[in-house]
Structure formats: structure tokens, C-alpha cells
Image (tube, rainbow, N blue to C red; front, side):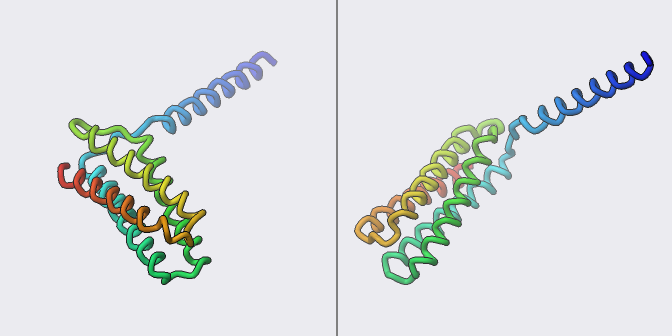
Length: 147
């Protein structure tokens, strides 16, 4: 009987240790290399560019309300996903400024897109929104050029 209790206890300890190892490996943030950060910046520039172009299409009335809502939701989800990924990343040596800037710009883009979902048909503000998307894109392009 005591031999059986010893095996159960040992299995519990192994199971607890395994769970701790899995949790520890999941909680580690990733250190991004220069190439990975460059890739993240290129993707961010692309998303900001697409946002800027799409707002232009909204200004010209070239999208149905249903398509506009759906595409803005897609863009917002992509920006939010990028923000979450960047939040968990740590910069390699000499890249902390670029990573932080990329985080800030993607958060600003996600916020812009969240607001746009509620006012995609209010063209009076869309011109300002397009300029904000343009400024975000330009900052991201500058950070990429300096990397």
C-alpha cells in the first residue's frame, strides 16, 4: 500500500513539475533579433499604408457600409494582434527605441481603427484620420530606415 502511495505521490510531483515547466516556458518573452524587428516594422508599415489607402476609399465613397465595417474590423484585429505580439517582445542590443516606437505606433493605429469602426460614414473626420494613419506610417518607415 505504501509503495502505491509513493508512486501516486511521485506522479503528482512529476505532473506539477511538468505544469510548472510549461507555464514557465509560455511566460517568457521573446528577444527579437534585428531581422525580426525589421520584419515587424515592414508589416506595421504595410498595415498603416493599407489603413491610409482604405480611409481614402471611404472618403471617395468607394466602399459599401457593410464592406467598410468588415474591412475596418479586420484591420483593427491585425493591429491589435501586432500590439499584443510586440508587447511581449524584448529588443536585442541597440534596438529598444525602435521596438518601443513600433509598439506605440501600432497601439495608435489600433486605437484609430477602433474609432473608425464607429464612424466610417462620418466623412468630416475621415480626412484627419487619414492624416493620422499617414503620420503613423511615416514614423514606422523612419524607424525601419534607422534599423
